[in-house]
Length: 476
Length: 105
Image (cartoon, rainbow over all chains, first blue to last red; front, side, top):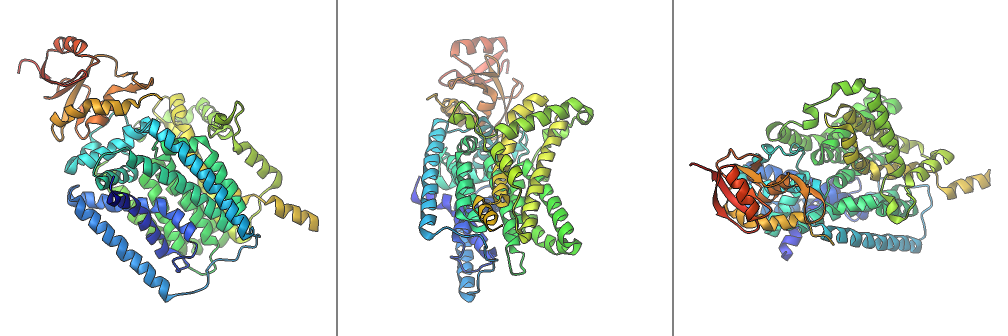
C-alpha cells in the first residue's frame, strides 16, 4: 500500500473533522478538538460513503482517479471554509459551564495515558484476531465484503448484487461495503487490510467518542471508567476486528445519543448539533436495517420528551433541523432500497401468527434477560462471568439517578430511544419467519452490541458520582 | 492457528475467476453437501464461499446455465459427478476446480 493510498484511506476522517467543525457551535477550529475528532471517524466515513455512492450511480462505477481528485478537492475547499470561519469569530464557548469538579491537569494526563495504554493493548488484541482471520466473521465476508466485491469488481454491473439471493440480507444498506470498495480502489488492490482498518477505526473511534463525550459532559474519570468498560468488553473488540457492521452501527447510535446530550448543554439558541444528530441517525440507517428502526425510535423518543417538557412548538422548531441532517442521507437509503435492493427476507415472510403465541413472548423475554445479565463474553477473563451490566444496574437501583434539569431531556431521549429499539427487536423476533431459537441464538448478542456503547454512555451520564454523594452526605 | 478457509478458497478460485465472464449467471456443482467443514475446522457453505470468491458473477446451485463451475474435492471424485450429470469439461484448473457445460452441445 502506497503513501497516497494510506492518505486516501484516512481522508474520510479528515472529511469528518471538516464536516463536524463546520457545524460545531464553537467555531474556533481547535476548540473541543478531541471530541470533534472522535465524532469525525464514523461521520466522515459515513458521509464519504454517500458521496461515493452518488459517484457510483452517476459515473457508472468507473473513473476512480477523477473521483479521488474530486474528493480531495472537496475536502480541501471545505477545510479552507472552516479555517476562514474560525478567523472571523472568536466568541466565547457556547456551553454551560460544568459544575462538577475536574481532575488536576497532571491527573488528566495520567488518565489519558492509562486509556491510551489500555487502548493500544486492545488494538493489539484486535489485530491478532484480525490477522488470524483476515476474511472476518462469516457475516463480514458473506454480506459486507461480498457487496464490496460487487461494487469494486462489477463496474456498471454492480447492481447484479440485488440478484444474488443466497442466503439472505442482500437488501442491507451499503455504508460499509462502499467504504471497503472505495478503500480497495484507493489501495489499487483488493486487500484484507482495508476492511480490517475500517473495523479498527470504528471500534476505537467508538471508545474515543465515549471517553471524550463523558469527559466533556461529566469528567475524565467517568470517561475513563466508561471507556475501560467498553475496551474491556471482549465481544466488542472481537466483533470490531471481525469486520461486522454492528460496531459501526453502534458508533452512529452513540453519536446521535451524544449529540442530543451536547445540544442540551448549549447556552446559545442553535440547532447545528441537532442537524448532526439527524445525519448520525441517517447514517445508522445507511449502515444496517436495524439503524432504520433506531432512527424511527429516536424520532419518537425526541417527540415524546420535548413535547412533554417544553411543548409541541419546541419540537416543531427543532424537527426541521433534525430533518436537514437526516433527509440527504435518508434519500440515498431510499434510492438504494427502492431501485437496487431486493425485498427484505424477514419483512416478506412475516409470521403474524407469532403475535398470538405466548410461548414466543416468554422465550424472547427469557433470552433478552439472559443477554442482559451475561452480555459481553466476559467469561474470557475467568470461569465466572463478570458482566458489568448487573453491577451497573445494581448501583443505579441503589443510588438512583443524578441529572441536572437541563440535561434530563437529552438523556431521557436517548434512554427512551434505546428502550424503543429493544422493543422493536423484540417485535422482529416475534414476527420472524425463521426458526425463532436459531434466529435469537445467532443474532441477539449482536443486537445488544449495537446498543452497548450508548447504554454505557447513558449509565455514566445518569449515575451519581460517589464523591459528590459522599460530600453531600457530609454537608447534610 | 487455523488457516482462514476463505483466503484458501480465494486462492483456489483465482485462476478460474479470470476465465469467467465479467458478469451474468453461472451454474455450480460440487461433490458433497453444500454445508461442510473446511480447513479451519468450521462448517461453511461451499456455494456461499464460491460466490464470494467469484463475484460479481452470480452463482446458482444448478446445472442449467450455459457455463457451470465445478468445485470438487479432487479431480477423481469430480469426474464421477461430471459423468453422472452428463456434463462436459471445458477446462480443468488446479485443486479440483473446473469449468463445465452441459453435454450434447
